[in-house]
Image (cartoon, rainbow, N blue to C red):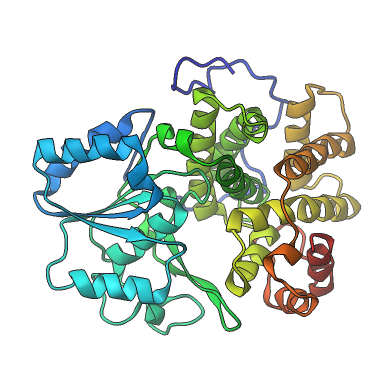
Length: 416
């Protein structure tokens, strides 16, 4: 792609895009709603604008961050900016995925004197924590009371103004309306605190934060983002709006992700991946996900497996079976047409059949998984009995092909 510095000009770049890949409609959804942030600021160096933006709130800012963020030179520059602008601030650090106890503890600490604005700066777990705290400071009771599938209370949708600044490119939480709360273990879970109003008021996406990520973490996060883009693209709830964003995100990833896997990413590649991840947040919010995430979420609640690794393991076999089954059902299924378009983009051959084009896409996904050297489920302590349990508890979400419990078990065994 033709790019200059850290800017993105993907739409203007000359791409060999198959006719029909960017055609609207997908599953011909003629009625849909679309949720998004009030504002998204994207680009290298955008972090510098945060202190000036915070002046508008005329009060204390609560920063919720990950530990590694504070070791980044960008953080030091941000601190200087906060001091220069006279922004009174409090700072909290989140370790790992947010648990109900962590959220409740933070809310108790700031309930009597809540901040004027909350800024979450870190990976997806940090953004989810900030999102949950901004919401729960306006509620009474534990976050457990409001979690889907667990609590009995309905969130009011009120929240403290919330700004999300991702330091990774994976979950797209900076553009989603849910916060994932986790409790690993035998009785563990991953459940969402969700409301349309919980989408961050501002997503400030600065690709420069990605440059200091450990390569393995960058790859696993990228696997999550790409899975979200592809699942929402072929979702049964896809719409012209979600398709347009998913297509751009997928093309950005298909261009840039190989460089990340090979350990040779530059500013342009980091920009593409950051954009793709944010777009994946918007597309999953509006079109939903599929069987990959239907299984991955259950695995994360059972054992301590990184979410991106789970998605990376599951994506090739789930997509392979999905496309194989759809070809038998209906060769003209919209999901097949979309997947074929991606395969044609990769190959540059517009004359390939649907099956041949999808084969190219699947070969690329399998190549990514191989280059990433992802360990199997056994390495994360899963037993064969747990695979059976996970197959029973998991679901298909908006996948265009409905996997049976036995088929989900077969998928799990294939990545064991």
